[in-house]
Length: 613
Image (cartoon, rainbow, N blue to C red; front, side, top):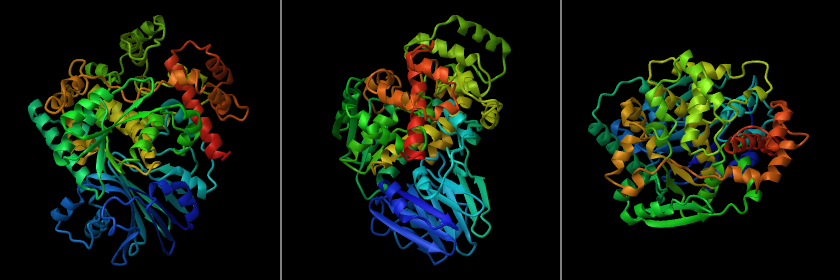
């Protein structure tokens, strides 16, 4: 795991890169310059510590900088009878490029962004992994191209200007959609994509080399028993690779859920001295007793870490600053604290990211397994609108009433708004308070309509959308920044090549069966986990956001949001903001807190990152 930066027709500032990204690679830094091309690499040494130095060269023709891990690189070397001078996965990428050009990515199981300078062709080949675990941001104008692993690095080297149109996306989605960023001329390389940069003309050719939608379109007729066995086999392969592809010790995050429980149970078969970590938060739901059951069953070296939010006011701006863009997901706060504490014990840790999006772990998936709400049906839409008008908002997000209220709300919508109501639900029903005289969601709707109008079931559609949007732009970003800000590498066995290309095509009932979410994984868990864990609901980090907004963080949030120089006044009606702060809006307290947090995160970015105050 590392940080990378590169440029064509631009001299990189090594001081700026070190200042903004050294946490990604505190062990070594290396540089490379050839003609118009300039590379910089920051290394967190994990695999082939002595032989994996970067930038790495091959035959004075190719030079690579690489962020990530290729977990099956030894298998790929054996498959194609490739031999190298080191045991580094970085060299494997160079050898594959020498043999196959750009046509080898489909063989890789890993998380990666790499850039290869091909001197003979005078090009740079840049590729990103299937899910988009490892980030890359690219600045391009008529004179130069500059790229880096983090936005703050680009901001430190270039006079970036804000792209206001993209902030409408942020307010509705909570993230910047797809390739969009807060800045003009800066885009994010999309998951499953690669670029060819012509170093002479600065022309960029982009190719989507992998798309999960294609695997949702496939029909898998495996029996339930065969599907369980196949997933079990693939999960074993994935966990084993992620344990063995490291010269450092690999541990496991262990919550009270089945995802991390399965990963831990399988990992313990290959590592009999496995270290596991559970966290608990002051005053919140404590999963430690359930996690302890798993740790005891597999005799792991278990550590319980208690996290306190007592210093949150002092840490808050720093945590949000790390993202380099407005970031609405408040679970970024505990994710940072958990990563900081885990780093005290080791450098590489396995997590359960991606299991919910692949196997159907969210309650909102249940109604979509019964009915395709993306189909145009005026009777359903009008009926839901009528029912919704009769219902007062719910103030308990886990209640059955809240479930029914949100179901009526999303059924009353159309197109992209259905997805937003079912998911992030920030400004839904209050979108008229956003100041815009044009359809700022038009570009996003085009992408969503491809999926919504496909022959997929309603369940597959929303899971496909979540993978492309929620996982890519929120959850993976959250964990990448939270872990790397603390020089910790997170590995996700549920996002392996084999699982990503098998699970989407499975029968819907293997994911949602009746009202049971994650049905197949729960059945697989019976083989490995204590019964008490198997039917636990999806929780994630239980953040007391509404309590923070009304208590501990009230003053700092009000100061930012109400500031005369605030950014929100450019996008949101002032009276609505005032009424929201004064609690005069008819809305649940959970949703009020979410809207205010979304705005507050934007204001912290504007002041601390953009204005650098």
